[in-house]
Length: 345
Image 1 (cartoon, helix red, strand yellow):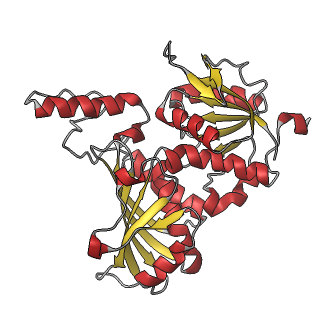
Image 2 (spheres, rainbow, N blue to C red):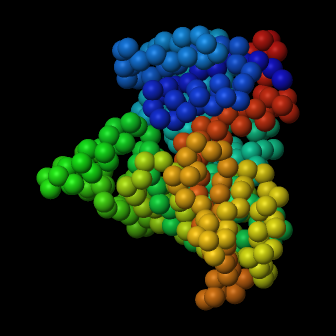
Image 3 (cartoon, rainbow, N blue to C red):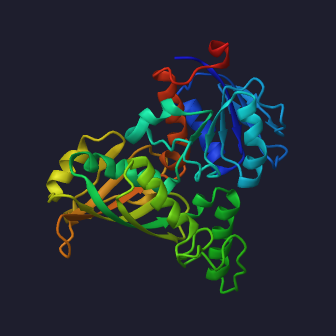
């Protein structure tokens, strides 16, 4: 496997920090790592392989010696800098979401559609955290019994907003509420402490939010089936880490909960936690810091034939974002679909 020179754009955000941690944990073959962020916090120290790394300001010339650039900064920064990275010959992994509408950019979840990495043209898309955990859980079932329809409600923690400011807002609001004081929202439209908000990203003309419609489009693209019906409701909840999903799935043919458990027990990246007799099921706090997608409460939908309901949880910053991005590059390097600039020369 090639060693590659890596850049993380948005290194001081929650996803950027998780990326750096995962690269270290997995002994990723990085010959160098550079950190960039549009807002540099002086005095913050980062390390990779015992080497101290400074946060740099990215310019058009920053990517000259970069093989792989992970973009997890804001949309404005990514729109400004991504063309420079592509022009410099760096392979971009977009976790900012700005390439979501570009059908030429493969959206990849390695457990589902790793082969799509081979058709990249300089950019690979990292789907939203909601889509990643959903398709990791559902693809193994779809492979043995085609899915006709998915109804999903997501319960998304404040860390899905991607910034430490969201964590601080929840903490500060909870403190004020417990002290009997008024709350003034900043990050969200309304109070998030002790509350839930069925509003993630902007509302579209069709009544869905942008986040909800992103799940619809990305799920169909990753599963490579535009005929699957998908309906999503996305809710922000007062949780720090770990996204939960209530999922209802209609299949082409009948499937029992036990059959689903047997399939998922052998699926890569999935763990079954499902024994309701002892209240054993996935919980967001327990998934924090772990790499798997956890599935439980698998049961028949008694109101609709050929349908199951289930509860799906994962760490939104890890498999839902940073880990998936790293796995994309690992798989591309392993299959020789991605090469360092030295080998391309």
